[in-house]
Image (cartoon, rainbow over all chains, first blue to last red; front, top):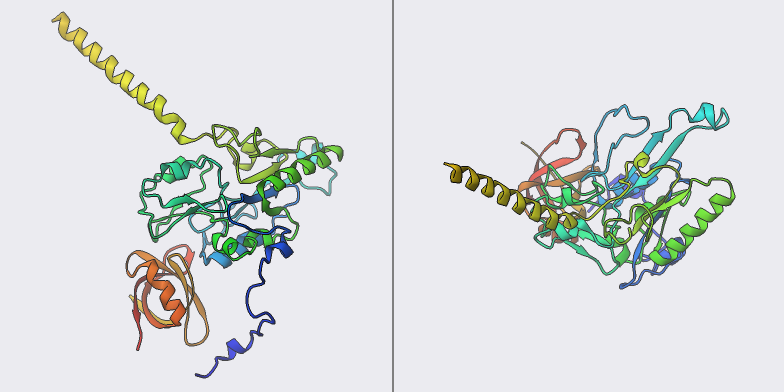
Length: 294
Length: 73
C-alpha cells in the first residue's frame, strides 16, 4: 500500500513505545494503584492560555463545541460540559485597576476548572447502574458501556460538572486521564500546563505543597490566598471529605463560580423524606378534622 | 444522509477518529441510536479496518454524528 504524502510528514519516534513510568520524569511522581492522585490548581499561576483545554480535547478525542463568540471575554467554551472536561474561567474584577493595582496591571482572575473527583462523590452515590465508580487511583470515572443516560448524577454534583451529551445520551466528565494513569503517564492537562498552575501528584504530597504555597504567598503580601477543597477548608464541606482536585484561590469561591459550601445530595434524602411524610400527615389530619365537623 | 469511507485510527469511548483516503482525520461520535456499539469500535481500530460510515453534521460542534458503521470492501 502506497503511503500518503501527509504520512511522510511525521517522523518516527526514537522510542519504541511509551517511556515506562513517564510521570516520574514529567511530574516527579510514580503512579501506583492503591494510592490517591489528583490535581492542585494554583490559580495565581494561571495565564489563561487554555493549553489544558486543548490537551484534554486532543487526548480524549472530544469535539470543539459552542462555536462562535460567547461575549464573555476570552472564554469560548463557556462552561464544563459533556464535550469540555477542562474549562478556563476568565473573571475580570471590576474596580480593581483604579483602586489597588498599578495602571499596567489587570484585574483578571483565571482558573482552570475541572471535575473535583470528590472523596465522597455525590454523583457516584446517585448512579443507579454503577456506571460511575472509584478507580484504583481514587478518581471517579463514568463507564460508558454501563451508563444508561438516566442523568441522576447531573443534579447530584454540587459543582455542576457532570453533563449528559445530546449526541450519545450518556453522562460525561473528566476521567483524570484514567487510561494515561494506567500507562504511567501524567494527565494531559497537567503535562501541558506551561506555568505549572495545574500540578498532578499524590494527594497528601499535593496538599502539603499547596499549604507551603499559601504560606509563601502570605509572606509576599497576598494574604487573601487560601485553599479550596483540602480537608477542613471551604469546598470540602457537607461530608464531601476532601476534593482530589483542589484549588488555591484569591477571592471568594463564588467569584470563580464555585459553591462556598457544597454538600452531598444524599444528606438531604432523610430530611426530605420526613418533611414529605410530615406534610402528608398534616394534610390527613386537616382532612379528618374537616370531615369530623360535618 | 452522507457517507464516507476511511480507517478507524483512534478510539475513545464512543468517539473515534476516521482517517479518509486523502489523509484527513475526522472526529466522529456515535449517535445514541446508531447501528453500532462503542465496544465494537476498539476491534475495528486494532484491525485498522476500512469502514463506511453514514453521518450528519451536528449543530454548533466540529465533528460528525455517526448513524451507522459498516465494513467497507
